[in-house]
Length: 423
Image (tube, rainbow, N blue to C red; front, side, top):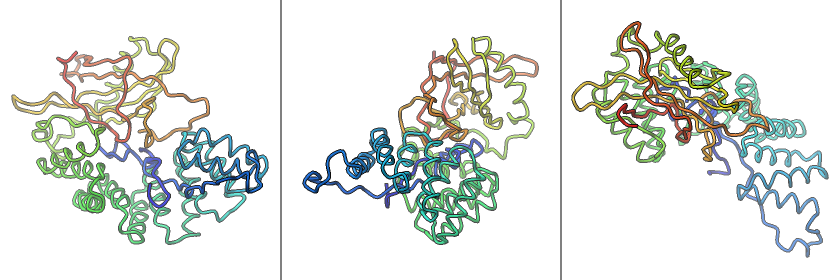
């Protein structure tokens, strides 16, 4: 936590799969939530004439629990305080922060909205309302909130960066670049603004500019694993494979959740721009996906609902039922093997989801989605398939795990090794 603020999401994660191996799975992942300042601990409240069950003491206990990150315990205390102080915007804001941290964005949004209704200039509530909207994939509304905040605070670098993230998720890359540029001019020492602008350049294929921004982010924060990782991707795409591998290894040293393929895969595989368009996975994806869905149905999955697909990365995410229970299903096709006798098996790119991983997420590959109070972490299954070796041939199953524990989704998509000889 810095300056009383903390990262709570990446507005798509996150990075969308478009961003290749991007840690930044989207924007939500990196939208920043403003947290209240640390609570002052009350001592000897009884001696001050306040009984232990007075509304002010209850409110202060909620503050203290929030400062200790015991948000579930704090929420009922804030609710109790609101029974006495229904017009205090601050309490709605505090409860909204608590809801945000227990991943109830709809309730958080309602509280932030009420706080802004009561105090239209409460800038931290406006910011957090924008974050909550983005977590619900309401990016247009999020842009409107951050624009409102910028009108109130034209020198608020965070407001520009958060609006840039929302613009990015809407596909408005030039607008996103403009917002990140404003954020950098206001706060040139913020590594995340450089990092996010680098992501836009990476998506545009402006590799030298992307590498430059990732390098600046790393200079400002040498522990920013995402910066090392994304610079490695930019260098890989530019054909600088040895330098790319050094960056990717460094990113893995800094964050154990970054999973890399074997060294030979990066050194031997052609850069993306060198792969013939006719060999692209995207052109074959509809047929592959249909065959994969048939395989899932054969294995007993029903009510298949496609949540996200990334043809260029050969992966998809489904919601389904399995034995009448909800189940997340992660599907991926293997990539080409590297050349040479010592080459590693092909690589698989998976959506970085971690339903039920118990670790704080940065969002999901699909964005946080409209989570309801009844949502519970789902079990997950993993299916990895080998594409047809020749036109007209069938796909083959490389790996199926009925119960699969995903890598915590701080980084998405996740690139992993597969070995068909490994049971």
